[in-house]
Amino acid sequence: MTDRATSTPSISCVMPAYNEARNLGVIVPQVLAALRALSQRVELVVVNDGSRDDTAAVARALCAAHPEVVLVQLSRNFGKEAALTAGLDTARGDVVVLMDADGQHPAGMLGDMLQKWRQGSDVVYAVRRTREDQSRLHAGLTSLFYKLINWRNRVEIPPHAGDFRLMDRKVVEALKALPERNRFMKGLYAWVGFNSTAMDYEPLPRAEGQSSFGLRGSFSLALTGMVAFSTAPLRVLTYLGLLLSAAAMGYGAWVVVEYFVRGIEVPGYATIVVGMMFLSGIQLLSIGVLAEYVGRIYDEVKHRPAYLVSERMGPGLDLPESPPTPTVRRTPA
Image (cartoon, rainbow, N blue to C red):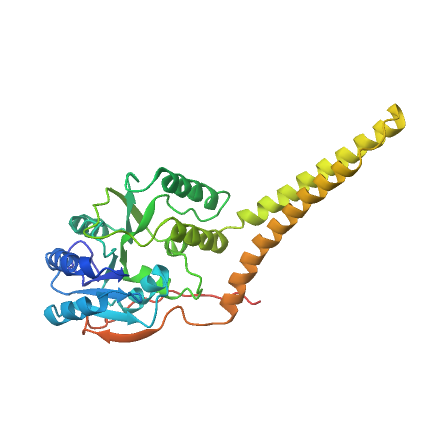
């Protein structure tokens, strides 16, 4: 594609699905209609992430009814980040759109996103205006997470920007070149860079059912993101250690002065026990934080694949003629 302003790109839409059997039959035709209005060469990649309901059967029926639909069946539930990775590895379009299968991402925005791409943006990502569909606790913890992960971080992750986005082929190739297995996609989108544009949107109500990604899943993903993209927890422990050391030295000096100047006896059992319990708690917390980092390293060095595919159905698009491949340089250990 030499001129975006006048070209009509092929479009791939990646849609991870977990227990979305009641939604796929409605959402997929709607998204396909929106894609066909933008290009004659489209595909919609449904990644079934080990669903326990009839998601696979519904996706197979959609493949039979629509030649543009591609089913990628993972061998088990690997998580949304792995499902997105599988979809990006499968997508062949000049531009790739990421959407959820629950209907909360409005397909009507795809035209505006593509127009931003034609104007030169390599990434067009959607940012939520509000979080009224979440509890106050969930929304508050999400805001706190973005503040913590962006604290003194060289790569800023846009707050409240999810997976709903349109990306140029070179951005997709850059993401595919990243080798880590503990993947935090929101951080990876920011890390690869490229010319990006934000668009506000209001999430639509879920078509059917309830989200399987609740507060517990959000906490697990936040922990992965914090360990993968921030050394803030380690910095906090360092500052805390320095603070406690200074406080201990000051308290020790004060006790010595009281004993020799005023003749006050050194406090005994209660002071020692409280101090030991406090310091033991700090040490266990520090070990736990270090263990999270070491555990991620352990997962990485095993070099297991991020996902396994048990079935693929649907032809999809032809391979692009000459996709740009970014240069990845690895520093010696």
